[in-house]
Image (cartoon, rainbow, N blue to C red; front, top):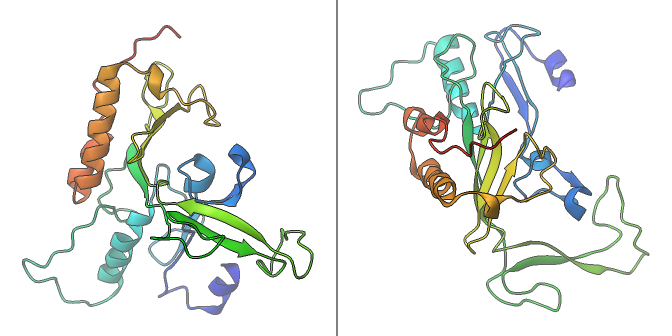
Length: 253
């Protein structure tokens, strides 16, 4: 990133540096994977450099990959002589521009989705139906950490399956207080009917799934919120998810 910055004209170039996912290095007993909805896999860096972004500044709050497209459009509008968009062809995004001074309502909740990969049928003794499996040998990765596999040998490694499909709500309220039962949580649902709920106030490492401990009215509201987060369109409509839950646990803390 720094090397690129030194080689360009920073007065008329905007660069966005980020990643598509985090990575697991042994958490939850998983090694070298990224297909789960937990903090270590959904948190990624986001750095922006350009004439519209003050040097050394930072933004408080949550930014997402859906904010990249509206940011690029905003930069183009402000730094070029592009003609105005014709009526009826306005661009509508689920995300918001990250350019300082733009209309930013912020967010307290957002949706995390993943569609599990798998074969339609068995392919060989390693790659099975509804699974994504392949052989690993000593040439799998050219960068550390390496697998200590003897030359000429291999093993079957299954990294994904179709039922590893989920949609989640990650809520990070602007004001995180223990008095708010639902200000910092992850709720996920899988097509199989399995659900997960982690209160990151009390369980920051997401080790105890407390979905079954929640009252029914809370679970129903959480499922309704997921449905809305999936089908909403545009930042204004999807922004309704920022509202807090109507249900409260009213637990003694």
